[in-house]
Image (cartoon, rainbow, N blue to C red; front, side, top):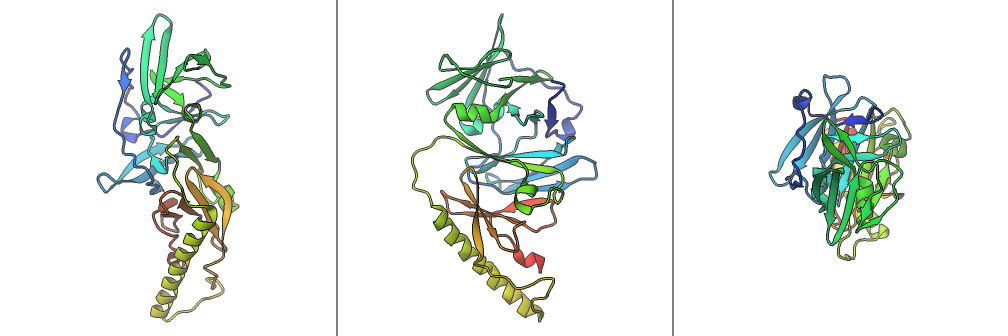
Length: 310
C-alpha cells in the first residue's frame, strides 16, 4: 500500500479512524447520486493541496461540498450513467488504477458483501444474475470462473476495503471512458488548471434506447450557441459597447464534435472557446457546459456562459 495515493479525504475525518466491515455484511448505503446530473465545481481553499468539490444533490436541491486532498496534484471525477458520483475517498496507483470503497458501487446497481473465514476476507459483488468474487492475492472469479487481472483485485487501507471500480464495471458489462488530463486534452495547456483533473465516465448495461446521434447532438448544441450569442449581442447593446480586439466577434455556429465522449456525453467545442467544452447527453438531450466562472473548474446544466467573458 505504500505506492497507493489517497485522494478525497474529508477534512473533518482526517484524524478519524475507519471501521472495519462486520463479517458477512451486505453494504447498502445511500449516497447523493442522481442519474444524468453532471453539475459540479472545484474550488481552491486556503489549505495547500486541499480543494472543495461542490455538487448538486437533486433530491434536496441543495449544493453539497466535500474536501479533497490531492498530494499528487490530481483529482478524479467519476460520472456513472451520466451523473456525477461524489466519492471523497479514492485510491489511485501510479499506473492509473482507480479504487473506491466498495459501498460506492451501490449507485452502479452493484451490491457488495464481505465474507470473512479462515481463508481471509473476500468480497462478493452482485449485479443482476452475475457475481464477481474478489480477494487479495488471488484471481477474481466471475460466476465461478477465474478472470484475468493485472493489478490487485482488492486494496485495504486502515481496514477499509477498496475495489477497482473500472474493472468491476467492465466485468458486469459496463463501458468506461477516460479523459486523463482535462486541461491538456481540451485547453492544450498542461498547467492552466491545477491540479490535474481526470474524468472517468462509466455506463452500466441498460435497456436499448434510441438516443441522439452525434449529428443530432451537434444541431442542438449549435441552436443553444446561437441563443447564447444573441444574449451577448443584447448585453453589449445595453452597455453601449461593441466587440473589441481583445473580445472579438465570433461565429456561434462554428462548433464541432471533439471526437471524444464521456459515458453518455458527446463532447463538442466552440471555435475560439475550446477551453469550455460542451457535454451533450445523448439520451436526454440536455447540455452541460464547462463555465468561465470564478471556480477553478465548473460544469453546469447550460451552454457555456460566454457573456461572462465579455
